[in-house]
Length: 224
Image (cartoon, rainbow, N blue to C red; front, side, top):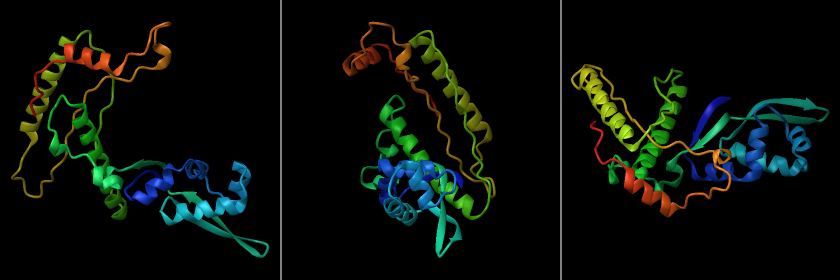
């Protein structure tokens, strides 16, 4: 079982999004037979077996072993991954294209970049698994609380300058055997937890959020 599998096939994505089949995938974090799974989820074995066959056809479930139980050969299956991510390639007709935006302050461009990352890293993981090699990646995740829009703008400016300095230091387009690497730096507000909302305070409307953002959002670019 892999840690994460990126789903690129539209039919497989639809299968994984079906509530019943999604619950079966969750249960199949540990190997089980159709009969054992049916007992856990409270459904007829024939119905569970039908859905398992479909999940197996889409590569979301795999056969682990076969055990003889009386006159019957019992199939033991398991989910192919602990978690699944649906690639934008599964909706290729409406897949976001980062080249269409290129606006550093656009949330839509940020989503397009994130979608491209899911697509590319998913493909790289498949190739790395096939060649039994370790995929070299690096990520940073954290939270920063800014006192004001001005401090956020100053941080963005310094971050952009530092990234540009490091890129200029290590970038070598002429290096024999050199390999390009994708670099994405993102900054966005953290989601507010419902429990943190002040008593009696109404949820901010979309219009109010847009008005607030336009009044406070800095307009200097992060230089690449």
